[in-house]
Length: 336
Image 1 (cartoon, rainbow, N blue to C red):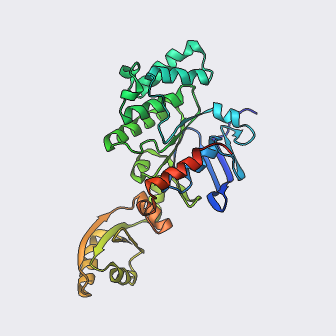
Image 2: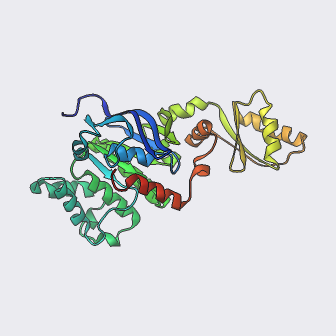
Image 3: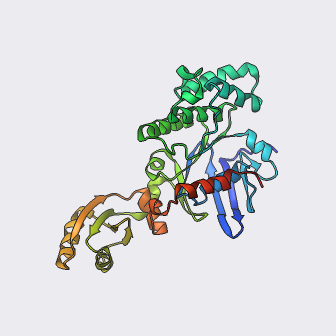
């Protein structure tokens, strides 16, 4: 079967993956449009990597079905793999080879004609800004350079879809910003559909056309970043009080407050015309003998969307590095 001509690069229907009693992915359904940049957002262990591992055929689903480029991930796994590229969360380059040798080896493995390899490699290293380092040993590269090389390698066989699992994890802010610039350029110039996982909400807000927030293996919200933020409405006033418990109770009793959510030692209050409500909130706290240590005002962010749907922030729900490594090994390990 050849890929169909629909506008969806990926269709997912009730896809599930269980490990014993753990539901890593729980009946997920999604449609991802061709040519889009789609983000999967959620904390460590939420199911992002497990979902991606099934879509790239490294894990077999426990239930449900999905197609990637029109190919069924279970019965047409080889066709799926030939039509996609993957940039893993953990480094997968050969440090003892040059950038050119890494790219040539990948091209050969994917059957790229020898006569075309040089041209493709030259185009890709220019795209990711590594043309001056093509003959350099990878072990001498910085983390950002390695990530850019991995993106180039994932594209050398001209995939229609590129999966990026936490592409900026562990990188400094400037390098992270540069990687996102390359990702957007890649989407615009090569028309590649990009599926990325991340728990950096602010970055996904800037780069993604649509996002899905995943928590405990379930998709809890899907839309454009702007639409998701607009569903909350109003402003967010963050208050840190001396005695947040009492502060929380007083705020819940106000009829002009849309929601009150405690997190990280703060209380977030959603209201209309926040700049007008701050003096009222402070005076009310003082009238009850509650000291206000700090107060800030902002428009709703994707962090607030996640907090609204789950009752906690991504930061609060992230596990230890050991937990994160265990989940990655579980998702990317040997096929079952």
